[in-house]
Length: 123
Image (cartoon, rainbow, N blue to C red):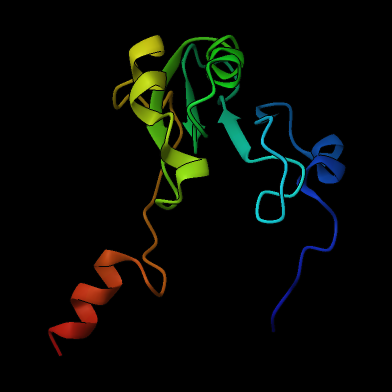
């Protein structure tokens, strides 16, 4: 069975748990729709958060994400510039490392990821 999300992420934001925050980058366009979604996950009671896809190199956006609180780790879902262009600056702003704040993170290779291509090419 295949499911499709038909509502923009912001429309779903009011149904997210309290430990999930959406910060949208100010880069609307045909590929980014209302702007690139940067997600901040903070486990209940955790001091540090995990940021997913810090976004473009837009100082205002990166600072808005950094202001959500101490950041322990940054995850990147893929290499499109609107998701990773600001990564180095964001780490510089926050000092993020590998502290997932109590969240269990599991990498799941998907078609097209380097891990999947490596496994496929070795067969």
